Length: 95
Image (tube, rainbow, N blue to C red; front, side):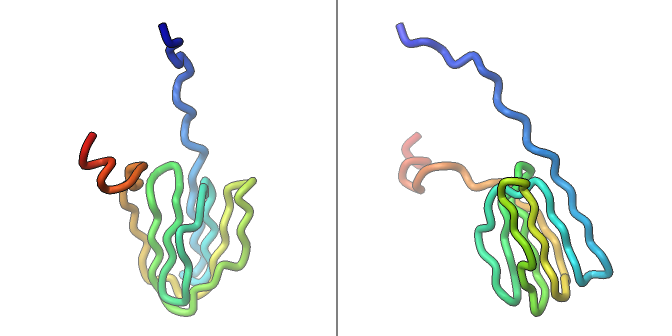
């Protein structure tokens, strides 16, 4: 009989946003940067996907071991969406 995994899921790391004058943003709890360009960025966190919108956005620093990303530019919007389910579309469809 297969052994059950009795470990409880790991809690999401602490996640904070520090926005300074709409020009500098520090994000903690970062797991992965999905994309970043001059107009937008998407960052995977333990609390969902954080979407940034703005102008002249630039990633000033990224430390995935510490889970921290820093952005500069004009930040116009911050929005969260749920994390995407794992696996391909067909795999999710046939579950």
